[in-house]
Length: 206
Image (tube, rainbow, N blue to C red; front, side, top):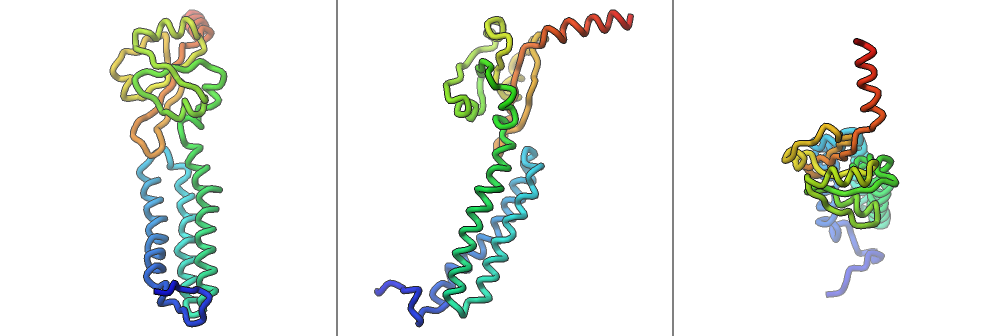
């Protein structure tokens, strides 16, 4: 069978009909799926509006349909649809979603601080740090903070429930992982300054 030549004047829209309607269906479902996914993930609530960008895809495809009798214009608009999809996703949607990642939200907190993890952690922290993050057990918390007073322990809300956190430590950050169920937390040693000032304030009130 001779391959289809799109520049052949005898080629018509019928040659691309099935592919077009598949693409049109996907372009309609994509913004719906994107909005639903963002709606049911609380961590993406602030970027839910970006799903509206995807509505342009079915609009472009419907525009292409109006030129189905002018094959060259039809194919040009279809190609434009693919370029637009890539630009919208990589320039707007992906960066916005990536900024909701716990690592992106806590990067200022973890800068220049010793990190370890308890039980489970978001592997993106290791990628961001460009080094392996050691694992510690609950009975090693004290030793870790004695050696690294400004250090941080990464874990998840669920895993931390398995231990009793000493009052000398506190959760300084909490954020749900994007498109995942765990909630990432960062544990730090309470500031000695805070521990010193609070009793003084209480004495002053008395």
